[in-house]
Image (tube, rainbow, N blue to C red; front, side, top):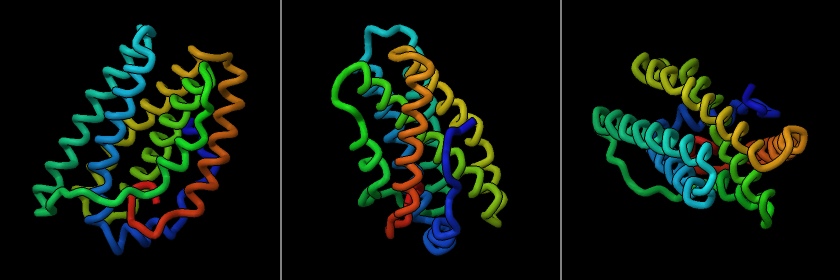
Length: 191
């Protein structure tokens, strides 16, 4: 369902254990970036009614999640602050082909893969953390991240054939696997 070709390594869970506050702060940044990505896609393909409708929904949900994470941080006395970003999103976005309609397909599929990895990581957090409030919180986000992934993949098919989209998704997923396996020393949601 998620089109990921790898599972997260235990290295990431060690980062979670050692730097949970950093991961939580990064999660807020990820929700903001997910909303910004959806807004950018909405603007880039504003003439596509189905896409703009779906991007509007995703923007609203991602901003709601952003505020939920901010509330969680505040409740735990963790100040929200800027962080140096990891390399995951930048590395994925370097794979976007420059000309349309391939550009639209790649942007949508990459957004979908990021959602898929978030979904997988939220499920891992739900299972891994001993804090029942956090486990419940991450369990509650799992479904929407999976739905966003599915939506992005479906929307990519507005710009190319099903077969071409599936083939490109497989290619991008293989590249995502390489990027996530390299990891990042910074403790981030996608490190």
